[in-house]
Image (cartoon, rainbow, N blue to C red; front, side, top):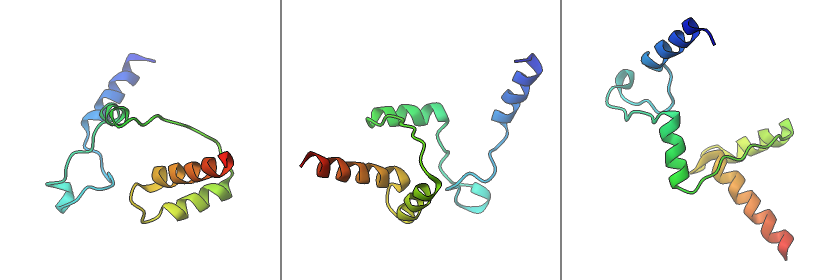
Length: 92
């Protein structure tokens, strides 16, 4: 990576992030700062969470997203719940 590219990336980190989900208040004032990726990984690790990437059919992913709408914990919770149920039924 060129030095100029590296400097551009550093500059992007300094800019305020527009459109961050969950930014409340007027223009994001008073909203809690979103943790950086590194901080989020540390929080996840402390909670015992492990990243687990899979490739799924588009239709299945769309169904998962529909199930996750409005649920506490979002997509991660839905997938974990479905995996637990599936594994329990297989072991019986």
